[in-house]
Image (cartoon, rainbow, N blue to C red; front, side, top):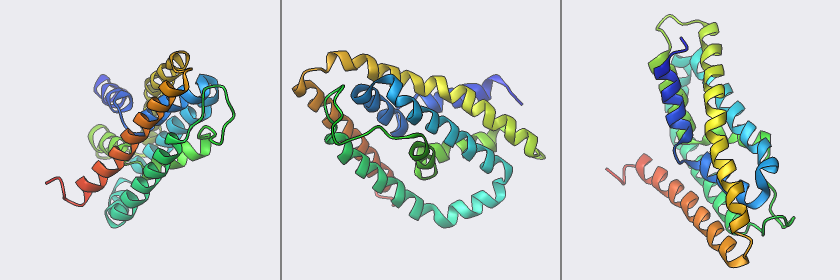
Length: 200
């Protein structure tokens, strides 16, 4: 069950750019690594719980997801656009400002409207669970996802925290925040366009 292909797949999906990693890097820049920890743990635990539920009831989840696909995409893209506007207004490192880091619960719940998180857990369950797998295999899959995901996403939070020192100038920080906001907004637009067939 715990094999190298599964771990490689989860690591690749976890470390590549996506909504979670963009937000973690931005949080590292704006709030530092320590204040980003709840966000980071929320992502990892949230995606692991999602993997557990998906792996436990794959047939039911697939039918449910197909019915709710468009509302989930709409909710996820709307949330990304809202986060992009928040990111564009983020304050200077070390200042309280109007914006606070995303917390554990918010990050965990975001996984349910994050298309990349759905893609990761559905593919992991489909590709790496035996056909007759029980709940024990689903638990192991979820734990592997969390164990591999956490250090991968931590790289983004650490990278953001390291950039924090270089972005003390208000102009540089503003440029960074606008860049991250544009990346989040572009991700939302790309997901929506792909889902509605505009990219085909």
